[in-house]
Amino acid sequence: GYLGSWLLAGAFLSVGSCLSAMTSNQVIAFITTDVVCFLFVVSGFPLVLDWVNHWAAMSVVDAIASLSFLHHFNAISKGVLDLRDVFFFLIMISAGLIATCLVVESKKASV
Image (cartoon, rainbow, N blue to C red; front, side, top):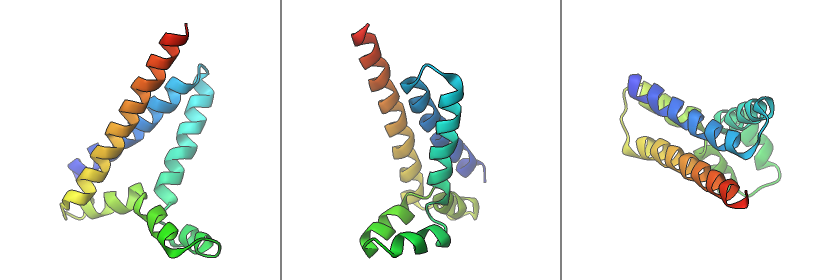
């Protein structure tokens, strides 16, 4: 329960941090963060996967399904502590924070 919630929150926050660093407008940062996090959540839903399956190869469908935050969170919240799910969140958190650092550094260099 708690570990999955912390990891999910960390992934959402790292995405939000990165998108916030990309824009100077807080409202735009909030809206884009909501949209991107929503897409990460619904990417594993059957409705989305069926739609993608009509025009993409099965390997693309599997790749999109594996990006679903909800899929990895549900496994952890059921008490199944699979290291793949933990690593997924840790990689997503790290990628978001590294991207944030890169954006901030590039903005500092351009000033």
